[in-house]
Length: 450
Image (cartoon, rainbow, N blue to C red; front, side, top):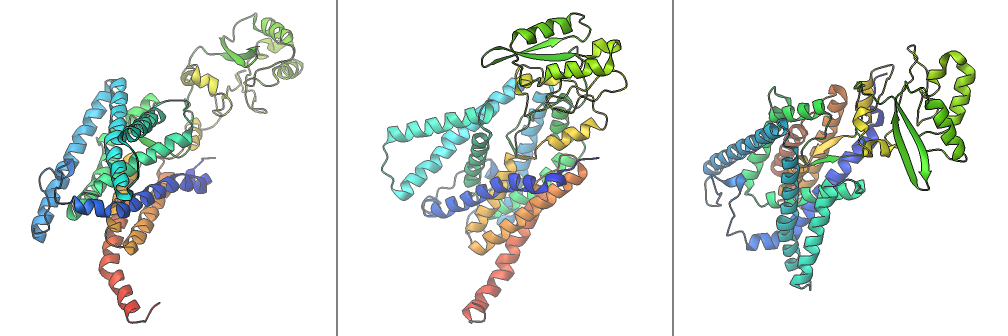
């Protein structure tokens, strides 16, 4: 039966929406906390990639602001498209190490400089008594640990997810410093670009996802994953890994050995090894002796070669197929050593029905860091006006993200997460600001609503 994300919809929604909600909440708190510091330094507006063409001024007319915002958004989207195409070309020609180092440098820069600036603003706002050396050591340790957590293996998934959310908060807090017109036009332009880049033929993000899928690799990008998975090959690659035999050689250490099915000395040698170990067996091969006994008694002397053709880390899953070979299934939670030793791409999995669909069902939902950033930018910009607009924009974004998750379960392909949420968020912001807030304030002031 075809599996779907709808089977575990509640877990998936909580796993994605919780970090998004935390990111938006902390950005709103930062906007409220640093509003006085930002207003005091607003006179010297910095020029960034989002306002290269036009610097918005309060004295400009509405037409000038709209035209300037459109030009800024166009230039910014073009720059993003060019950079994305360059990344696709580098990934296509296997410059993977360069891309990884580039992402490490980007994370270090964001945490160290942009995060450090926000940290100093918080210290200034609350007048925290801290010396410069301690501040530098704290910031340096925070930055290094963040880079290692995001890009290194063996780090707890919660720590990695936390730093991904922190990266989104820092970038979003900086984007909220953009002028109002530029911010709204830029958000709409990025929603359109995300739609084209992911779904249009030849779109840069579509090409990147297809390349990563064809190579069975992770995306070379900063991506938040709702739950950890170990990638598995959906089809057999025809490798010579016929059998995995595990045995405990020393206390606390496990040996894995690749053995061919055609080895005539396999059964005698392994039976001797298991007898010498005094009953100890590897957790990767539970009850191997019982399987030998039951297999020998059930199949007779005519199937000696199939006695050792079953190695299954999950019980009651060694059903024989018609060609005499059994499935070799290595569970991602039961056998991390297989993937750690580099055999994860060569594991055989001979399922009877739709292996690709079963693989897709085990993977968690992934959300790009840019989605965190621009969701939070929208809510942060709404927080500069009123809390009522914050509530409306938050509900709109969460509703749009829920619709995207439902479409993801139906389409079974990569989908852009910005268009629905950003469109609903912008619509709800202006409806709340122009219609709902005057109505609520008017009825409350006239004692018609409490």
